[in-house]
Image 1: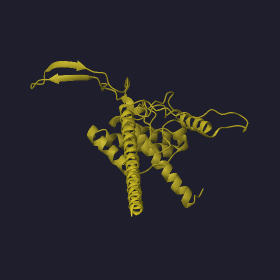
Image 2: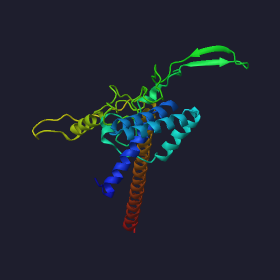
Image 3: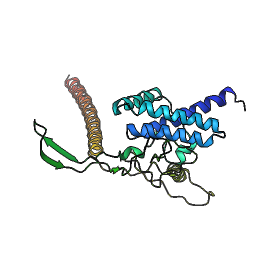
Image 4: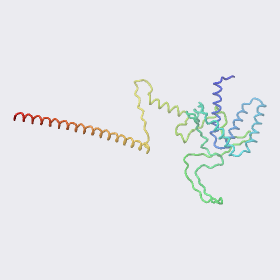
Length: 284
């Protein structure tokens, strides 16, 4: 099968996005190794000849011999290097969006990110040690998010359980039963985006015949100190504008009154002068 340039670019974008999603979802250095081994296991299942399977087994053996000696810090540096290289890749993949693993802006929702690796402790405990390394105090607090601690550890040896679905085929792995992203409440369900947008458009434009009555779309914003401050500032500006307008009107009215008074005064003086002149003429 031959692909044109456009189809090849889309395929490369799909591969890069899949690799980025898998690397982003890892919760520790060991999962970086496990997802790679899962990928090799999947390739081995697709191999149709013994020669290919032996070649894949050799790759797995060399992988184990190389990366098993690396420290956690070195593996994390490899992960960061790959994510930095792929940070500008934001190809939207339909299957990821349907499974609640990707948002419509191209960013990812990592469910495994909130799972504590095996052998680690969930946040919530503070230990104080003295200068000799002796524990002298323990205090606890409630973490903001909810974490779960892995109870099993995956093996990096050949033909061993990996205890993670990362690295498997994205078309065979079912999405999590509950896709909850603590940073984006209610936005990561399987059909949450589509249902929310459909409901919004239905309320905004209406649906059905023109004779059917539709409810108006009411938008309520929670009261916050920021909203109260903004409302107060708007009211102050409006009151200031009203005061300026009233002052301008009063000043204009006062000017008109003064002008009218001056006109009336000049008219009365002219009338008085004319009457005085008429009296003088009569006397003469």
